[in-house]
Structure formats: structure tokens, C-alpha cells
Length: 228
Image (cartoon, rainbow, N blue to C red):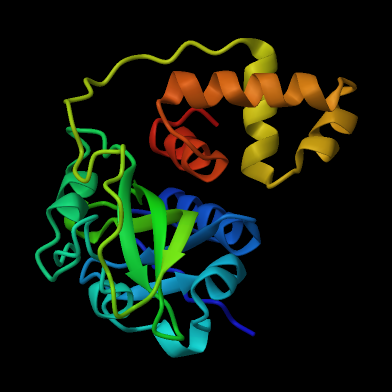
């Protein structure tokens, strides 16, 4: 089954390659992730999202993300809407979007508490950038009672992040290249002739240096900053 479509860019093959590689990784990611276009329509929905939220790609593709997810904050207030400020911030790239807690609606009507990360795949114009959500489950609550205990994570991005040069070791660059290829920890260990634990340590170092929380976000960061 086709999970989604790949957006195109008008500034040459470089941006198209970025989109293709990142969206391909989303399809194969073990983490629940989906992508949306400039109008916040869902254009990519992976298998992990289908499993976590109980909605097939066929059912959500082309629909506005805020209508599908109906996101709420920890107090049950509507969080996802047409003028999403977090999406605008991610496209602007002047401030990093920090992970935030969210209650989202599933296909069976229940609500799932997730920790959400958001990043963009650049295009020739910021308004056309593809946005990617990555979800990590925190628990479930009945749909009839959307309120949940307050999350310790902020519900909005905090603090500016200035652009800075990221210094990587030669081994970190090799590990990053493997992540871009979609290699697993075990496959990377075999390719580099090092232990899986060592690979995980290098990945943890990359996530810290990039100030991101998932491998998928690290890949997107690497493309955005031309590190690969």
C-alpha cells in the first residue's frame, strides 16, 4: 500500500532528494510519524502511526492534521487548529520547536497521551516546507474524559536557538551517514566493525549535539544543515 506522496520542490534536485530520503525513512521508522504540507494536510502516515492511533493511511491522507488528531492540552483545551503557531515556528527555523505533550484522538474514539516532536523538511520557500510530527506514547485516557494529569513537558516551544556550527568527529559522521541510509543499530555496528553499544553512544552524542530527541529528527537536521 502506498503510505503517502512525496512533495516536490522547484529549486532543483537537492530539495527533492532531501524530501525523498526523509519521507522514506518515515515510512520505515519504528516511531509513529507523519508529514504534512503547507496547508497542514497529511501527505505521509507511517505504519507505526496506524498502529498507535488506529487509523490507516488511506483514512487520513489529504485531510488537515488538526481535524484528524483533534489535539488537546493536559487540561482538555483544544490545541490543534488551522492557524497552528507551532507549525509556523517550525517553518521559520529561527527558534527550535521543543517536544511538547499532547492528547490526540484515535480511530476508536479514545484519546492517547503522546510526547510530540516537530521538525521541517526545507523547501525553496519556508511556507512550502514539509512538517513532520513524531509521536511517543505516554498512555491512554477515555475519549469522554479528555483531561489528563499535567505533563511535565512544556505545551509550547520555549527559548530561542541560535544557529551554530556543529562539530562532529569522523566516527559520528560515519554513524550519521548510516542513519541517513536507514541502517539499524545492529547493521551500523556490522558496517563500522564496532559494538552496537558503541553505535548507541555515538547516536546519543549526535542527538545531544543536534538538540533533537529522535533519530528521524537527527536525519532531518543533518539534511537541513548539509552535514551529509
